[in-house]
Image 1: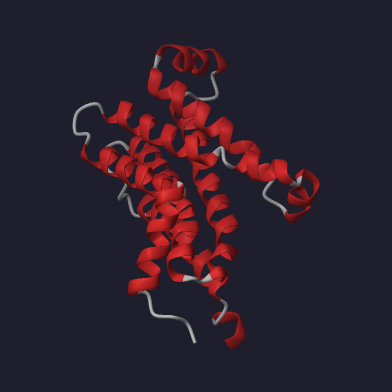
Image 2 (image 1 turned 90 degrees about the horizontal axis):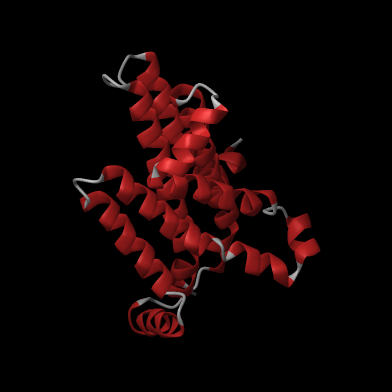
Length: 206
């Protein structure tokens, strides 16, 4: 039992479930506010975006700290982001649109933030479907090319949030800046910057 509790993956898994647990607790105690559907939609959408940002941060953190083991958590983090995206999507088509295909189609066509949100969700599906080791081996180099879709997906998620909010853009703009910074760290000069910071400020591992 002690060895299980010392497993870092188990702790990461538990932390990733906390937003869902929070929603369940708030739902059971009547704490979802005057508009529970909007609360659930916003919460699951926010945690989808946060999950994407954390997933994107794994590679820069690995380069900065030299801790190669961080890569072990990237798949789990990405799948949890997809999990909350599924909850976000199901909340929309079930609680908001009551599984009405015509209403959903009209929304996708007429409301730009829905169009972008739907496109973002669709793009996430092949990433989740090919997240296994078997698919990595089967796709070879194409796997990495496919999973680079996470970069435009993160940008589209921010655009979706921006167009949803309309008035106070502070929070989506913060997410946007974070996405741009995380993507910049993947450019040659960004990688060089991380290596420079690591060599000067990060203690060598012994």
